[in-house]
Length: 152
Image 1 (tube, rainbow, N blue to C red):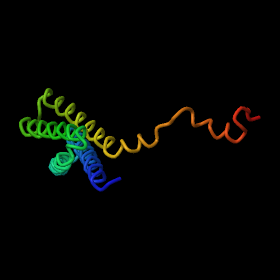
Image 2 (image 1 turned 60 degrees about the vertical axis):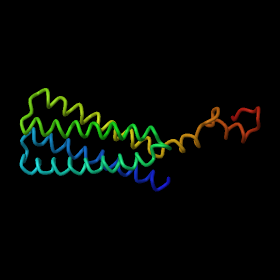
Image 3 (image 1 turned 180 degrees about the vertical axis):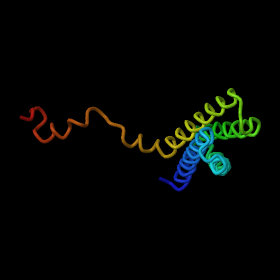
Image 4 (image 1 turned 90 degrees about the vertical axis):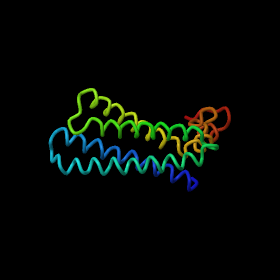
């Protein structure tokens, strides 16, 4: 895997990991388990996630000619991150149910975008190289016993 592909995978993995930290901290805040510390962790992880999304977008922008699908996926991640940032600022510490639902659905969509980007980065050469022709599971059996014989 080339260095740009590794960096793209690193950014998508970091974004997914930071999003997990944001979700766990948000759940702890809602359950009132150490809300002061968890609020700090939530904000720090969300801020780092914004930096990672911008880094991911920059790398995808540079590779937009060769990997347009990754470029579009990073645009989705940037858009969702901007939406979640504005929603978090506007809703405040006690969001109404509609804002909480939008935050939850936006977070799930962002996690799906990161997972999709993680799966797309570096995967195409692997699948092109490993495409099976026919039933390769039985090939060693028939080769070892002749073309028309059945193993006993």
